[in-house]
Image 1 (cartoon, rainbow over the protein chains, first blue to last red):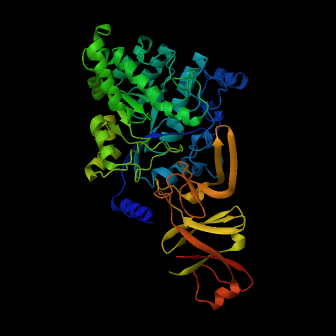
Image 2: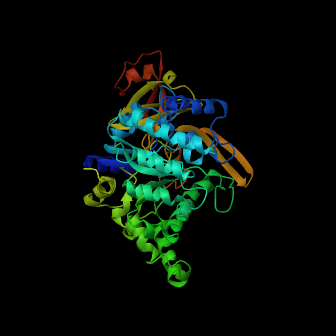
Length: 367
Length: 137
């Protein structure tokens, strides 16, 4: 059984130092954010509840083989969903994996997809404060993300401006299946606010936003829907490029989170090919699309591709650009990437450090 | 090669499992309907602790829509990415030749035999009246 033994000794060779760009904190119940919600919205929650723009709105759209899409070993002993216990997060993840900084990405409760826009905006305010009070103030290694209700542009912009300059926040978080493709002009005030506050826009997979779960409609199986993460992200990148968002906002930085990696070079090449023939339709796109992607878009590494050979993975990183890759674990979700074992490639020590923390340190401006 | 007493049989009832460390190795001891199996605890994919996974049966389908479940309780599913390992062989159901954990022979021995024989009970005293799980590595 050489595999097990080899991995053990490899892990012991270096001390882990990691910046984890994707950690999912959870509430034990809605009551956790009551202190940060106006009385009116607490009553709203009690009377009407939370309703997202899809059916069975409190449930995930497809049943997973593990509830909450979580690691089976991530349930806190004291009860509550995975990700709700800071103590367990420290013991199971932050401490043993050498996490120096971890980015909080709250997904459930999805304020950006609330049918009631005013409730959505109130929920972003409450959950942003909740991240600071419940997590960042208790654990200095953690950082919050500015949740926004992107369908109410004015509400989203107000929240970004309210949090801008607060070092507890590192980025603005939007889920990909917005009402319209993300590059459409209705969302531009959000990008303007992002640039004004020097915060990247992070797009993390999650929810369906009321759209069918795949490009071909509603699928039968989670396994089909799970492939959709890359479809949804390709739609986001394509929209941002061809709507001219990066021409209009040359300082805008976008992070594509948990979308997979294999598709990035092929999408860039395909966009370049089409642009060279069809560009008269989009004269505002002045340069080959791949250049915008290379300059404006970063990608988190989880779920890491496993092409079966070290050379194939290194070739993929070469094509994407090593400096564009930000390490993420997705703790406590089931497709968690372990910093010791997830890169199935022969990396140099310098490459490993660059991926595990160097790039994120530069990108987010951590000293 | 040495044999190690790791538990009394009543500590691991049917359907249960126990994580033990023998000779620096983490080993999961599983009781499947009265039979004991021992496999390495660390998932060869990315290192999840197999002892924390669910014990499941083998679900197969001869054709779409036609399911059958067999070998109930004979596979353990990694708590992280869901790789399923056969508790009898340590082999993954997918990629059985490439992805496997070490499997160790596990036997039940009476305390009487253990006290007289050359076995090692490292962590607790052995009494004549009880039955013990013994693994070899």
